[in-house]
Image 1 (tube, rainbow, N blue to C red):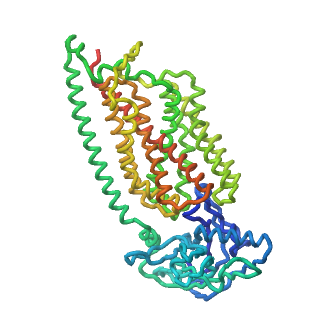
Image 2: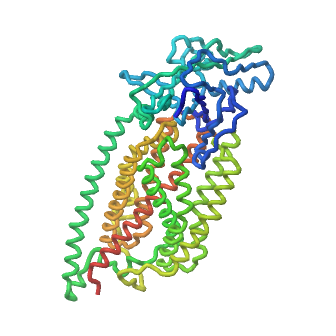
Image 3: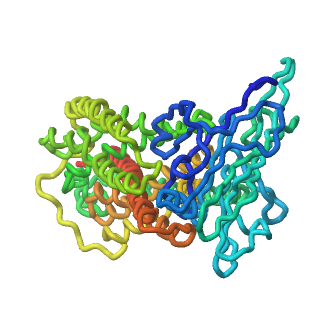
Length: 595
């Protein structure tokens, strides 16, 4: 709430670009800066995403319009320091780096007309633009026909700011800020090939508009509604959900009818002759719970996958309730990290319980691998990416103190909780409904479709089909710096992904058991986990077809972070498939009579 005498403060955030993965702090460029005020504190999620909010010298009084107010003047000479500053500024204009300003925790938006008479409001605006040697205007230079001189940089050193406010009823002289819009302009200065000293003055104008139509509670709507492809997303998601639900219903119906007949037929076999003529999945009842090869590694993967699954479910649930909205900066990542740290106990419990059921005895190795293997791989990848960001001077480089804090959370909270979970998990193995024979049964020669690899490849197609539309918008949010806010749809897609992974894995597991192949543990994990391979292929396609990223560092960062996401998604989907198949196998062998 602001009053007539209130000073409105404008904060600045990092600058980023769709042509580079490297964000930079506002002070990395030679703009006007505020050095007297203390910068606001940031939460863990903001630091991880590279946000660096700091005060700016742009300040104005509420309902006091101002014209061409001077903020500062930057002078450049022919010395190496000034040349380096200008080169960096030109690099920012070439790569179309965008300002991100904040007023009253609202992004200051640049609204302009697009196709079909629509208005698009961008929560950022460019620092300038460039006209090539061939006279081709790039990026923001397209919007103004005056920007037409060849091989010329145009810097937007003036901004017109419009503050929209809503008068609060029944409160004297009080108002709520409901929107802040900006129009960048170029006054007085053009940066040619540098020779000699010159100045760049930075100025602003501010005006105030009363808006009775926008309420304070819905002030983000005009930004979110103008995000590109919003309407397409609604129809695409609904279409995808209908298809996936239809296919899931078919799979469920086939499985229930087929299994019901199988179990009824097996339970009616009373004579020795009938028993000798057994065929299908009942034949492998003495081997179906035989411990898998590399049971240690599988149990560790399942422990980490359980941790990721619960973390994802709870985070999306909170996001659906509105606790993790875009207005609550960094809350989504902070929530996810805190949950991951606190969920060490179920990870240790699941890994230990399954490992004991697999007949494992090296419990210390199991719990250490659960606590350190998958998190260690992610941290090692993240640390290498952080070194690159440090080398490039990017604001996304995590400060040393934050790095130490994350290590402390991992070693001092997550690891002990994993040991506690493992302690209880090792107390008792899972009891299976049938006994395991001492001598393994020989597996008959398999057809092409019941061999492991074709089944694994086919098993990931349907789960990926239900997420790839949402995946497009999530990748847009991460790499094209667009806001993602449709957590309700994302939660629905999450539920359908779980159902689809489960049903696809169960269906293939049933076919393999009917073919008398009882090695279902790793196969069920890899069948649904193969969805992550499709995700990786899609991310590579997205990089080459949708992004304009240039530079070796940005390319390495993109694929480095993509590998982290693919590993997490692999553990997540693989765990869903394994436990669905585990439940299915336990269920069918517990209801059929075995002599």
